[in-house]
Image (cartoon, rainbow, N blue to C red; front, side):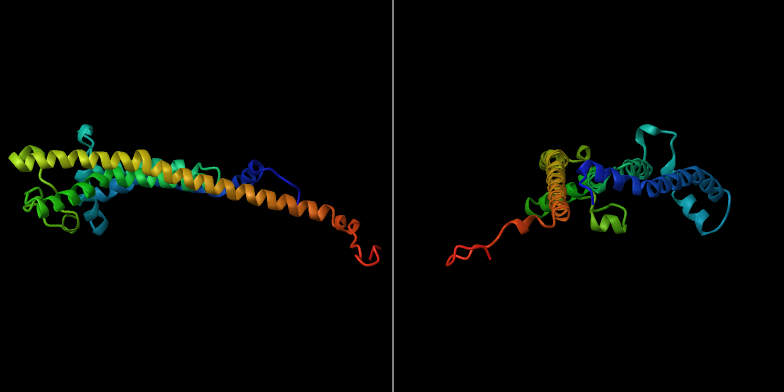
Length: 230
């Protein structure tokens, strides 16, 4: 096999997967183009699918875009992230874009809620505060991640501690997105590049051995007793 650079090899891999990525992109476009028709049909028909659409129709109300619900915004950002992942040129970029997108999505849409709920739970337990909303709507999510009372509704000690925990929450998110994720991705990319370089060097060595199979025949073993060539 001819000796090729890492860039050429990655370009070949990118070319081989081009058809799969194009197919996935076309499927995504078809889904986006037909989804409004399916939603419209669901709103004007009956059945389980129609009931599901009508039940959650209020979450897709764009009349007031300033206060867009989390669900449609989450779906919108997921689709845009999927487009970035599909445009990746190699497996390293796929992992890079996937990790960044997943970390951003989880942190933005659930990070503050999860961290804030955990901090409020610890505060109520150890500092005897009342930050958790005990009168919240009973649901599976609220049972796992108890919601917090709005800071504006708190008074005195509860408000002071809640304000401090809010900034602890924000700093934690900044550390995850601004330091933790880039550091992890940097280590991953460095490891992949070192692996590619090692593989390329190994293949180069193997190519030279195949090109010059008799290179070691010129070296003869000398008999130390007779000083003659064996």
